[in-house]
Length: 75
Image 1 (tube, helix red, strand yellow):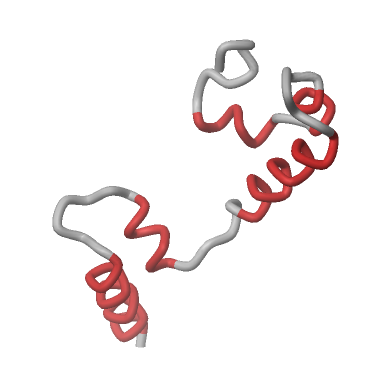
Image 2 (image 1 turned 90 degrees about the horizontal axis):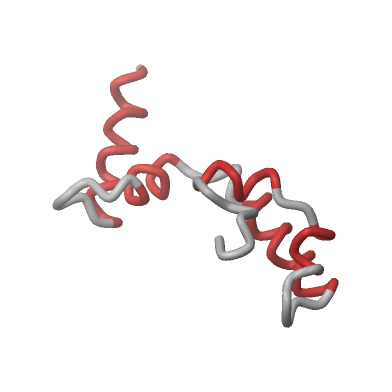
């Protein structure tokens, strides 16, 4: 953020290894690990997504219950 590479959460998905490796105290391997972690975050499960929304009173267990309920409702 200090370097202006990220202004919104969406900007994380447009970062490159080269941009990160150019930052102070970041080696090529560390930069690649960050890029890999960001790429992995593109896919998730419904319960994890629901929990990540930060809805009050929706923890991991509630998110799992809501996700399983939505699967039942599809039937």
